[in-house]
Amino acid sequence: MDLVIRNAALADGRHGIDIAIAGERIAAVGPRLAVQGAREIDAAGNLASPPFVDAHFHMDATLSYGLPRVNESGTLLEGIALWGELKPQLAQEALVERAMQYCDWAVARGLLAIRTHVDICDDRLLAVEALLEVKRRVAPWIDLQLVAFPQDGLLRSPSAFDNLKRAIAMGVDVVGGIPHFERTMAQGAESVRLLCEFAAEQGLMVDMHCDETDDPLSRHIETLACETQRLGLQGRVAGSHLTSMHSMDNYYVSKLLPLIAESGVAAIANPLINITLQGRHDTYPKRRGMTRVPELLAAGVPVAFGHDCVMDPWYGLGSGDMLEVAHMGLHVAQMTGQAAMRQCFMAVTETPARILGLQGYGLEPGCNADLVLLDAGGPVEAIRLRAARRLVLRRGQVVSEAPPARATLHLPGRPRNVDFRLTRKE
Ligand code: FE2
Image (cartoon, rainbow, N blue to C red):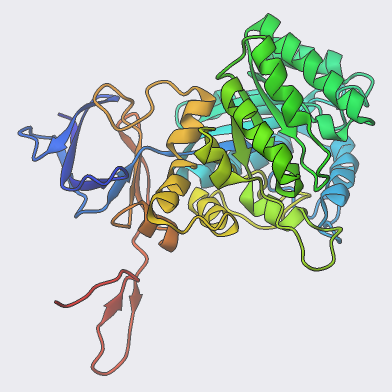
């Protein structure tokens, strides 16, 4: 074996597990494997997980914070207006450079697969070209999946559909949309139908920004689920955001949830962004905006958490840390039960891997030797501590290392170090 990781915990609760790696693949997983590694790493009981996966991101806008000015109100609509001001000024080289810097952060965070939307409403398709270039450059260490995203509306922006088709022809992977941003409900529904038909024709996946509003009557997810069934797209479609569900009538949601489940549509919530951008027109009590995550999960709908934004016109914070995303999602959804907290970890690892259709993902023999070794004993502790990524492996090679989070105390009669783990003397 090229590498054996000894005594790891796994996210499914197993402990004392060895992981043997040969070349780019995982060869064996089990307790006390009788194999020898050219290199052996003692995980010391810490969590080994397949890499983090971000199901929803905007890499064309990332790290542009403050360009050409900051978002003074912090609202979604000022963010969209600000992005409109920035778009004509975008230069390909600078965009590539910012995206590459973000990808460095991602690797350091053990985030090795990202689905990013790319705005296709600029007729030059400069961001598409830039992100296709980034995808090519980072391919050895990050799976980057691109979604053709008509930010200004498919029907609202005259050249958007042609641009979207051009972007797909250039190599963009997934069909995007933004039905709630079209001028009328009817045009929103029409955009969903056109985009799903195009995706069915082309054999592509679909991932739409859908109902990213507090308007309880924004019901495009219903059309998306229905079109998915009509066109046989089950398992290939995701609805991103779905924040209007937070504000919908409960009776209507009781009809909607089984429809989404039957249609095989996945849901992608973006907790950091939903909690800050939604509810802005409310006084008190203020709605929290995130979609109904526990109820979707209970209905059998796969739910992933996305980062959405990092230091861009919509959000001035973030650092590519999917544990921070899971931490926020857990709090906003009040998913504090033991099983629910583990589901939040799955929402930034295995669930988005399935939504993206990643091949060879997981810690099983035959899977790609991609993993992250965390400075935590299990998934809940990893979320609590936003644990350091001690080691990040891609195809069997170490691509990032980080020290554990430790503080040295100078207190009489107290321990020398703290590591923020719960230790009890029996
Ligand atoms: Fe988004």
